[in-house]
Amino acid sequence: MSIDKIIENVTPEIYQRMQDAVATGKWPNGVTLNEEQRANCLQIIIAYDALHKDAEERVGYLPQKPEGSPRRRNQNSESQPLRVIDE
Image (tube, rainbow, N blue to C red; front, side, top):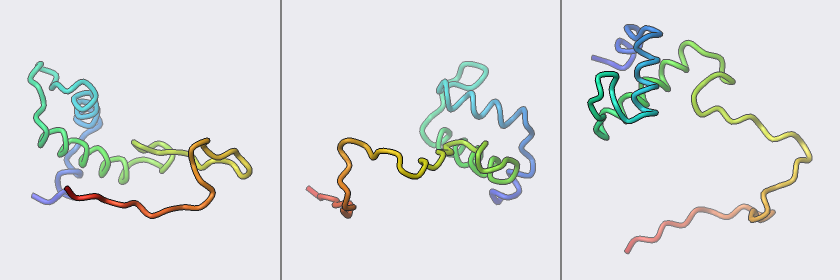
């Protein structure tokens, strides 16, 4: 089944249960989520939000900083690429 078909069948109640399960690490019956279930729930929550909510209401939304706001103290004025070190 495609993610689109799954999202079409998610009700607000199912959405809320998935959010609660991800937040607590347990299903409503007390059974612990495994990592795959948690990842799947997060994908469904994000896809559901994209379909049903405005950008400002979605999970993970971060508002833009206003113009002229101070930068973080440890942030340099020049951006630098992320470097991955394999050991």
